[in-house]
Image 1 (cartoon, rainbow, N blue to C red):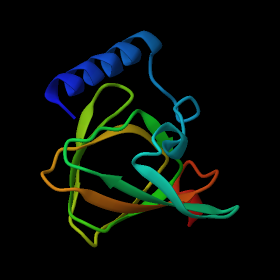
Image 2 (image 1 turned 120 degrees about the horizontal axis):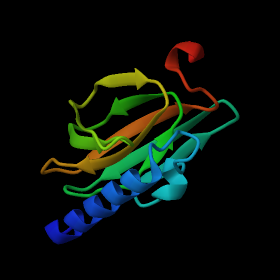
Image 3 (image 1 turned 180 degrees about the vertical axis):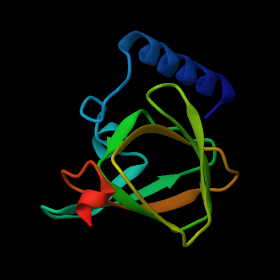
Length: 133
């Protein structure tokens, strides 16, 4: 994505956040329906959904949600998340790392120089990871 496109996308996100207030996990769209270019379903049943997530360098998604989940980093991953409150947080992990956490709403960007691949196991209907254990 061109830098001018990223600046424009960032401006739109900031305006949406400023005008609409915080985005709750119920208001944000689902990752797969919001961004099928980067998110695909590998497996799904009534308990879990497994997603393949792939981003090329510099690619950005849209603000979206995930229920409680575990992420398995297939490749080294370098990125950022813009949160509904406008905060930007780093999102980096080495290949092979596993991270589990609560439901979240974010807008990811691959800030690295290589593509990344992450497999996410979402726990349907769960807001907290602890409740799923």
